[in-house]
Length: 185
Ligand SMILES: CC(C)(COP(=O)(O)OP(=O)(O)OC[C@H]1O[C@@H](n2cnc3c(N)ncnc32)[C@H](O)[C@@H]1OP(=O)(O)O)[C@@H](O)C(=O)NCCC(=O)NCCS
Image (cartoon, rainbow, N blue to C red; front, side):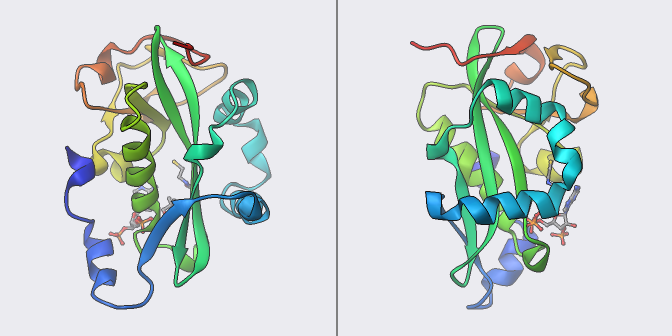
C-alpha cells in the first residue's frame, strides 16, 4: 500500500538535515486560531463558497482526526477529515489540507495526507478517503480517479479532481451516489 512506502523525494531530502523535518500530532483547541489563519492564507475568502465547505457545514469534521504538522516545534500545516457515506458505504472526505507558505516543500502536506488517512482507515469502520484535489499531488500517494460524475456533490466540482484512496481498489470506480451522513452502526 502506498501509504507505507518510503517518504517522498522532498521528505527524504529534508530528513538528511536535523532541522526542518515535519512531524505530525493531533490538533488541540489551542491550534484553532492557527488553523483558521492558515486556511485563510491558503484558500482566501473564496473558501466559504466551495462545495467542500458546504459538505462540512452539513456533516461536521471529526476533531479526533484533525492533525497539525510541526517543523522544529512550530505549527505549519493542518488537515481535517469529515465522516461521510456514499452509496451506503462509510468513509471520510479529506480537507482542507494546507501548509503555511513559509514551510512548503518540506514534506508536511504529504505527511499530513498519508498520516490522517492511515489513522482513519486503521479504525476499521470506514472504507475510503475521498477528496477533491490535484491528481499530480495525490495519485503518487495512492489516491485514484473516480468514475466521472458517480459521486454526487451538493454543488459544482470538477469530476476529474474527485479522487479516492481505499484498500479495496475497486471502490474508486464503484462508489456512487450522493454524499450523505456517516451511517451509525
Ligand atoms: C498543496 C500544499 C498543501 C502542499 O503542501 P507542502 O507541505 O508544500 O507539500 P509537500 O512538501 O508534501 O510536497 C511538495 C511537492 O508537491 C508539489 N505540489 C504542491 N502543490 C501541488 C499541486 N497542486 N499539484 C502537484 N504538485 C504539487 C510541490 O511542487 C512539491 O514538489 P517537489 O517535492 O518536487 O518539490 C500547499 O502548497 C498548500 O497549502 N497549498 C494551498 C492550499 C491547497 O491547494 N491545498 C490542497 C487542496 S487539494
